[in-house]
Image (cartoon, rainbow, N blue to C red; front, top):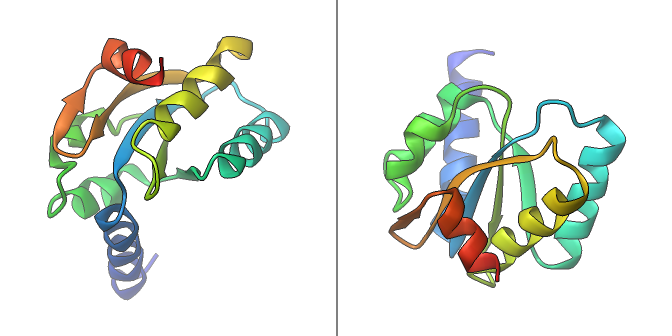
Amino acid sequence: MERVQKEQVINSIQGELATAKSLVVVHYKGLTVAQFTNLRNKARKEGVLVQVTKNSLAKRALENTPYKGLQNLFTGPTAVAYSANDEVAPAKAVVDFGKTNENLKIVGGAIGETILDVAGVRTAAS
């Protein structure tokens, strides 16, 4: 990926996260394409977007957002779930999906500037 393309991706991620009320970071290692698609479809019905991210670009994109404190979570096969409409919808979407598929691992998240650990994300979902 060329530098210009990387900058476009970073700007795109920053733009999306600028309107996000909350964000949940997950690891998806072991999920099949069909399972991941199912997660995306279920989440989309709840107003949540689930996006696979390139860790180095996501870390750079988070620098100028309220979610800067989540940068250390971006290791391994990472995806983010976020919503501009509902603060708890991303947490609900990933926790509900995780009940039927143990390969989806919640790593952490944030509601606004409040950083959440795994237990915090589960609490927010309930």
